[in-house]
Image (tube, rainbow, N blue to C red):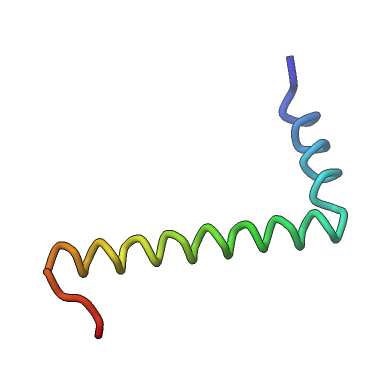
Length: 52
């Protein structure tokens, strides 16, 4: 069983590396962008309005 202290320690070790932080940030930005695109597309479809 993983205690919360151990879990926090593992998390700190994983994300203490600069590369891991950078990768995590890039994944977050990509996910945000994909969600944004999805909601914009959904809006166009729902309102039957498409950009020219």
